[in-house]
Length: 374
Ligand SMILES: O=C(O)CCC(=O)C(=O)O
Ligand SMILES: [Fe+2]
Image (cartoon, rainbow, N blue to C red; front, side):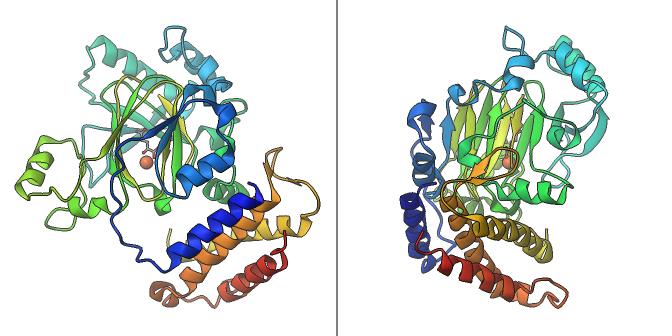
């Protein structure tokens, strides 16, 4: 991130500060397609999509060098079952049954990848149906459980990824998931954890996304306040018509082709259908949220201390530049400041928290002040 971009972003957030947060965002007319990696900088993404919180699709040129794209797909664009079996056949993976609704999600079971692939082959042979239902391999933490060396390369646009950095630091979890499944598998309507933004790449096959800007989900609630499970279900569409829900504009529909990367901005609800086939993606209570912020804050404060001329070395060869560090510190400070004054957080017993949230906030603010001139 360059200095001008950071100042631009800080100005953007200063302007937002006085505004009401619950404003319903209008649905944009279209989703931009970003063709060429050479002419699309970090600042372009940051100013054009991340800050305005708008989705976009990156062309397959952005994921050209990925090992998964090379090894996991046959020349005819189908998943390479033999390669997957040879390399991951014994790995136990989570599998959801898309045909069974459990609250607003699907029940999950676990099985070795080998069994899932057998099911998949049977499903294809059975003309895309099976007595076992429609099973979707979801949320497989391949990167956490085994070496994912070369499978993907973190796009520069997502290099300051707080959620994954948090879990990597704790060495417990991550938000990097693989999904794979036959045509017909799908993910019900939801928004991502903590209203985080996410990005996701199709290794092969085609996905259809239904995207709803933040706030629009409110108009979709039923009489009990529940959010829909399937926004494409005829009964749901009929109930919308019945209730005269024309103040809720239809979702943005996006088709994601093989190799393409979708950016899902913060707080956007979405539903996803596999039209042809597989993907890999990146992506608590108040106490845990504080812990999460603290871990990232400490890491940024440490990096801030080291800022000298040029770039700062950062985890396994990827780098965070000084402007990104300063920007992250100011964002963490702002989020923490709003956590500290939140009435729900004030009900939490914070006496055991170290450092005390107010002290951490002060440290962040002092560091920001000391770095103002950079
Ligand atoms: O691909 C899917 O089925 C779900 C993707 C999703 O919800 C996400 O990446 O946030
Ligand atoms: Fe999602």
